[in-house]
Image (cartoon, rainbow, N blue to C red; front, top):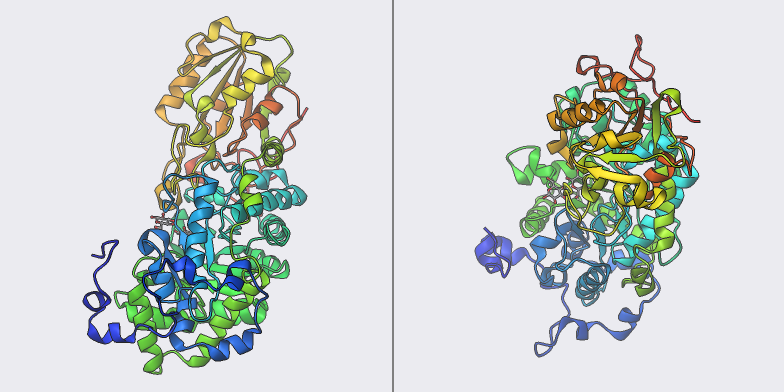
Length: 610
Ligand code: BGC
Ligand code: BGC
């Protein structure tokens, strides 16, 4: 419909809506000068945040609605509309990445958009949001941590806080000052494609680690701190059948007991934003639930930050977009992640206010909440990306924190006859393509929404790391297990390919036929077999458990495969504990700690060591 250069406002919206667009918020452009030259020097240099009540009093309705609007980078083209519509926020969806993609191009891009915002009448800075859910996954070269499920296995809030602090500083280095993280979902059904984004199945674990992540993201120093976002409010991990964006069927007491504690603790830790869930609760879409968003979250829990919608989520509530906007804003959603049809959103919300369907007081409340967080994260003082942080993206120091997190996330499920750690001097045959695939290690939300196989960023595969740890003379490698017989021990790496959200929903979680063939071929060698799982959730092990002498779960470790080699080689002891119950079969799912009859293959909290 809308090309990048764009039809005129008139043709896109119709004359009436075009007239409603705000000419008022622009500083007149002088003689075709570049937008950057229009930013007054004090705004470029940074300045103290103004008194927010006084600022609000000066704002026109157009300027207020602009603050409530978040557009995606791909829809905004050169960013002229940031200026023209006084937009308050932009995001990069999982695939909205600059080309070429580097920390530097990110900083330049976000600075360009910021320049547009600063050149408006009031010069309110923009806040740029990204899915920095395991490190700043959008940026090529950034360090990527284990996904949350692996962090859940560490049981270590101090480590999670440290990891989040690194994520914050790398994210800020790219010029984004808002991370859509942490995900405080309590994943109750492994069929759900977002299980790996959850710290685990127990509300207590999510409570503790979610709060630690909030602190790490938001307390990373004046330049390095980013606004955190607890998501997805509420009950996203409890949908029937583990269906993404599905329906959570539970009484309010159950919803509060399982899915709310993560928000209570995130709010206590000072989280500045909360994202609403695509899912519904007993058939009612969360984006229209005034009781939970306004009464419970903002009222009862005392949340003073702002609520953002999920990606195009309000559109899904009904076929009537105007009615959806009315319902969501009145339910208490303060900023709308539109993210594409933002002109239409602006015009329709404005019409709703004119018609008295959305009150000026609700608009003021939303805008005040947004401005307060911008002031808190010093966007007036430091509107642009800090180039010292840009230069530190992917640094050795940051990678060391991730390697530590990987070590601590590994869970040892079986270790017969002390097969692990690999004894000094043994010859090892490593097999399976997953042992040498950085993309598989990273999973989704890694330089692309659903991630990719192969090498697309900087990091160390398990194979490279084991070669370093053991020496190449002691390690052979094959994708299919050929050559295993000439070694003393075989290590087979099996698991899942990258996915995100609904594309990861699965009715079956058995190993793939090719992974099973790999294990069969490795077993034929007659040598002790170590199976390493690289997966975002428990997989049904079946015979693998008896075929293998040792089984290690590495989750989705991210870029630092050296952490896996540290444990296999004995440089570090395994300490990870299962963040979720390990089911015996598909028929047993869902199985969660505390169930009336509880008989998983491995219980919540299981994990061996030596
Ligand atoms: C996801 C969110 C994410 C947003 C922006 C949505 O599809 O549900 O978790 O923050 O996209 O990428
Ligand atoms: C975006 C993601 C978003 C998803 C929602 C994708 O195109 O890149 O960020 O979460 O759409 O469906």
